[in-house]
Every structure is written in C-alpha cells, then in structure tokens.
Length: 439
Image (tube, rainbow, N blue to C red; front, side, top):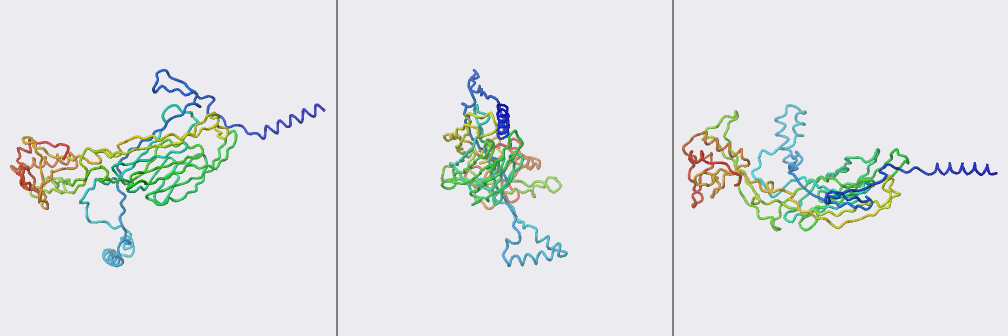
C-alpha cells in the first residue's frame, strides 16, 4: 500500500510540474544603482528604491514649405477648355497631349516678397530619464506641452516617433515591437489641427514560458490648443513593454504674434545683383542690374522662445523586476508634478537673419539704394556676405571714377535730408570700405 501511495505521489508531482510554467527569467539577478553625478562618494542604493526623474527639451530646424503645383482641375470649366485648346496646338499626338495635360501647372512668376514672420519648422522633442533607475522601470505616459508666449501654431502635418508616424490622412507603423505584429488604426481627426492613432499588436516569442499577449504598442495624439493656438500638446500612452523615452518629431507652421510681445514686423529689402553674363563674364556697367525682394521681419536679435512642460507617469517596479514576466511585479504608478523648461525654439539668426551691407571707411556710413518706385532710400542689404562682397568687388573691377545708377536703382551715400537724394560713390570710397553683418 505504501508503494502505491508513493507511486501516486510521484505521479501527482509530475503532473503538477507539467502544469506550472517556468518563469521568464534573465533580466537580472540583483540590481544596485550607483549615482556619482552629484556626490563623489558613489552612493549605492537598491534600484527598487530609485525613481528617476524625466525632463523634456525641444529644438527645431527649418524645413521647406509644403507647396504643391496645381493641376488643370484647379481651373474653371472655361479655363480648362482654353488650356486644352492651347496645349493641343503644342502636342504632336494624343499621347503627348495626355502627358502635357497631366503635367502640373507652374507659375511663371517668382517670389517678390519674403515673409519672416511665418516659419516652417521641424520640431524635435526629446524626453529622457535623469538619475539612477531600475532597469525594469519605464515611462508609461508622457504629455508634452509646447507653449509659445509670442507666437502661435498655425498647423501641423506630420508627427513621428520610434513606433508611429501620422500624416494628415494616413498612418503607418514605422518600427515593430517583438517578432510578429498586426496593425489596426484609426485615421486622425481634424487634421492638421489634431490627430491620433491607436496601434494594437499581438506578440509571441520563444521563451522559457510562452507569452501570448494582445498589447497596445502606442497611443499618440497631437493637438493645437489655447487662445490663438499658442500651444501644441503631444500625448503618448505606451503599451506592454514600451518605454516612451526618446524623440518625437513633428512638422509645424509657426507665425509670430505681435499682440503678445513678439514685436511689430518691419519692412525692408534684400538685394541681389546681376553682374555676369551666361558665360560668367562681367557685364558692362550699363547692363548690370540690382534686383530687390521685399522683406518682412522682426528687428534682429530676438529668438522665439517656448515653454516646454512635461507631465509623465513612471511605472516603477518595487518587486519582481528580475524577470521579464510582468504579472509577478509589484508596481508603483507614479505621476510626477509638471516639469518646465524654457528653450529657444527658433534661434535669433533664423527669426531675423542679419543681412550684410557695405560700410564706407571715412564717414562710416552705409551704402544706400533708392528704388524707382520708392521715395526714400533703403540700406543696400544682401542676403549673404559673399553676395555683398562680390557686388562691390565688381564695382571696383569696373574702375569707374563715380558710381550712381545700377540699372534703374540709384546707389550712394546719404547726406541727410532730403532723404531721396544720394551722393554718388567714388572708387576711393569703395576701395577703403568693407562688408559688415547687419543692415
């Protein structure tokens, strides 16, 4: 009888062992956090007691405006008919006619105005952890608010993280998590002002214990908020195993708000010179031209600042962090108080590029230009140092004893009132002058 009981007991142990899965192990055996960033004594603490802080920063760089050439459908019915007749005369056969009609329309005009109160920027928002942290910890939710005291967000059209990209009207998964995943999405609503996406994924990996989980990879929402659209909010909610540190990239259009302290825009002109023929040879002085482009910008020296506020939730593992399995974790979900940083979102040289002008040595005055349609002269200001230097090198190369008219534009030195009268420049003045930053 005792042998039978022993056999039954052994059989029962085997059955129970088969029904209990192995733990998913291997993250670490023990974890000690050492932080010597502020203390030379190398203080060590149990990582289960170390909660890292998080901070967010933002910077931006210029991107080209989204411009799309219109097609024939942008014309009225009568305009389409006239366009088809005109194109038909220039087409050899029906195939070339179809190709010509499919070609986007192009404007024959060039830009005559530069508006530097509107900026097309790509913003990179960085969220990082600071200080000692448990390797099992992660940021589960982040809410980044970018507020422009002196500007406003006109629109956004693309946002991307390591896992998700939202375009106006389309969504893609840019990086998978795990070995196999399926994707279900909801289109962003109200784009370009707001948009959101939810990603669902199924994960199956070969481990000591097979884990099959249906998990949410990421919820990403972008919204323009506040009076006069002064704020951009980026909200992220991570799913199973997703840590939300890293970069979020969003393309935006930003404009200055003079009513809220950005300053009043000023009108001026940027000049460019045509001093060479098609072969690169210097033009005769009578054929040279000065071309002007109207410029709207703020006075130089002012960056566009932004307040970047981060509200985040940390999933802090108190016990059970040594295994990859999360159901045995004792977890503290800690939502921290908002953390704010002030950054120069658009540097001053991008808000108001300085321009370059020519200074006369003896009088230290600046060369001026009077356009035929203007009653007052403007500083002869060039976009770059090389543009300004090349133009005045050309004047010195010509070697004229006196310089007054370049095409229809009058150049010279202002002697005071009347403001529309300029004294001609001499070769000696140009030979001793120099180009400086600032107009």
